[in-house]
Every structure is written in structure tokens, then in C-alpha cells.
Length: 209
Image (tube, rainbow, N blue to C red; front, side, top):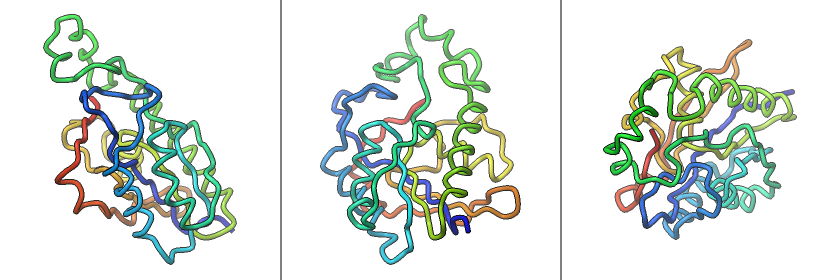
């Protein structure tokens, strides 16, 4: 039989003293606080029958998956389809970049968006990965460690919401857990939790456009 639940987990805080939009740039590790956040997320599901663990190939996701791997004695399966979207602003500090005229053409169509991978493409690959993980599980609950925008795309999709949105108002904090269940031929959201909420006050979260 397939899985019972799918938990989409965002990574913890990243060490990013320059405050750049790191996107898919390699080498960005969790901060000390980020490791604590990841631990808190994994601890929040202690006692649950977690039977499979997937993570984006990016370092921050792989490191955020480690506490899950240790707690539930599971290997981390790297899933390329749940990676951060491409973004023209990678490596830039957003507050500075959006004031520069050369950046303005990249912001011409926020409905797509024009600055990176289209929302519809992110939705499609994420839902495909979630669906495959659900079907591949023999039973129990599946954890997938991903990134803010991909998780938001899934959450908005399963609720029938428009994919374009204001990035500043995303409901997907660091190390948050968005939980899905399949009902018939579609997924529904059945839970959202912020197990690292007590740590967020001290965290830096430089969101993407």
C-alpha cells in the first residue's frame, strides 16, 4: 500500500552573512542555528512511522535531512525534482538589485515569473516527485526536505489557489512542515507546523522573489 502522509520540510537557517539570494549556488551550509532548527523539525515527528526520506541535492537541504536520517535510521534519497528554482537574481542582494535599472526587465512579469523558473514548471515537477514518493512507499509517512518556493507551489496548488503570489507573504518558515495526504486522485493539505518557531526570532531568512 502507498504512504499515509507526505511531509514537506523546509531547510533550516543558512549561514549567509552577506545576505545574498543564494538560490542554487553551491557551498551554502546551515548555520549553527539552522542545525538546531533541523533538529527541532525532526524531533517534532518523533514516534511517527517515517519510512522514507528524500532531500533536494542542495547542501542546506541535505544537511537539514541529516537529523531525520539519524532519528529514523533512514538513508537520504536525493531527489532532483524538489530543488530550489533557478533565479536570475542568484548571488545578488535583492534590496540593492531591484534598484538597478538593468534588473528591471527581469521583474516585468511577476505572474510567470520572469526572473526564473515558471511557477507552473515548479508545481509540475514538485507534484510529480510527491506523487512518486507516495506510490513508492510501502506504508507510513514520507519526509521530503525542500525549499520555500517549491513547497509553497504545492501548498497553493492543492488548495486550488493561484500560483502567482507576493513572495513576502509566503507561509513557509524555516524548518516548517507542510503535510499532505492523497484523497482519490489528488493531494490535500492536512497540516502545517512550525517546530522551530521559538528559534525564528533570531534567524535570518532572505527570501527569494
